[in-house]
Length: 334
Image (cartoon, rainbow, N blue to C red):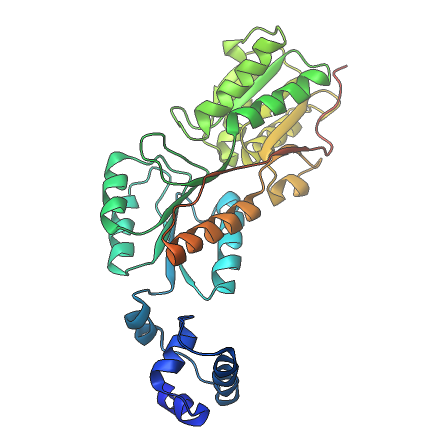
């Protein structure tokens, strides 16, 4: 059996209450006493009991994170950032895979409530009235990532999707392209789908290029939907010299179909993606894309959540910068 808090107090010649205050960063001791207690803890190899500590500070040192698809490259990068900060700040992370249609979201919110997590990071999903009602009843801090709500104003961390999609389309236009197709995300997706469509259409409009229904097709952000969408575009027989895909996975699918049809990228067709996932660097040729700082978004969301947990003060929402990462899938049209 390892040393107890009483053993630490005895060796440091202080009370158990003082050791507890030091462990929980509470006031009531000198800097000299703090150093002495921490030194004894180090020497004895004392490990604070998380349950006992939770009874003192009313916290579990645990946060919950909800993703529509934990296995996606997008989610893994955001999660990496969240865990980096959480572990640095001595917090555990419970990850919940809510599925793409959110059918498990309510169940996992209930589980996180039962686990008495100190806060929740809610990602990529529409914040419905039901979700908001449950989150509000839990009475803990909540941060949204890659989603937001005007009706339910939880603080959020995200990129301006409309602006980023505008920037991607404008980049193709400035390369000389005027026949630009778009592979969009899921139809009806208010978070990442509709804003990226609006950005694409607004860029076309600003540069005097008419929107063509035959050059637009929905996907679902995944690789297979990118393949299917690219096949649809080719089957329609409408000429286009460039494709803006609303995710890197769909852009990679479009690249694959182009290769299967003997279409050379970027000589005959330019393709730009969205996210700057590792798959963009690994594709052949390497994919030009709009970069979202996903790791940094995860880190910032965790920092904001822990600040709210520790201070009780609501933090400001943050719009993160995006950028175009130029690789080898975009060129001027022939």
